[in-house]
Image 1: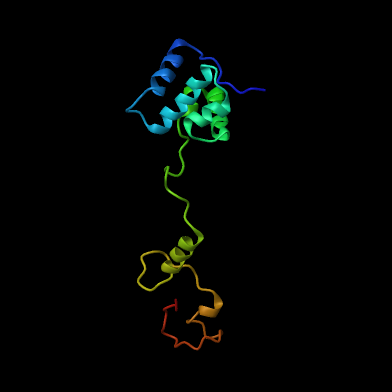
Image 2: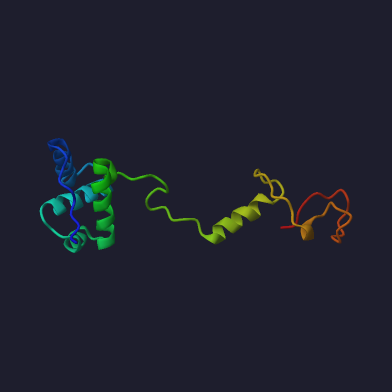
Length: 136
């Protein structure tokens, strides 16, 4: 089955999509998605739209499905992480946890694991009773 963008519901929707597909001052992502719908309306198939849009056929299908389901609102971003910002790496998360436990840190420290506890006499840490710092 060939995937195509559904026909516009009214003249306003068609006018907005066609105007967005040629816009120069609108957000680039929105222009690209409107262009995908416009190319689908003109009869091009998903692989050809992907080549012209410089994205994968899977991406074209995703946006055509969203437009078919939600209309113009489907072309908007749903939110989440800002575009271009990568997910934090595990190393970055680990360093944030380490920084939280340092003396003088403004973050709330995590409770120490038993081998680092310096204030308990029942553990074999050997620290003086008044020392409340954690080794990092």
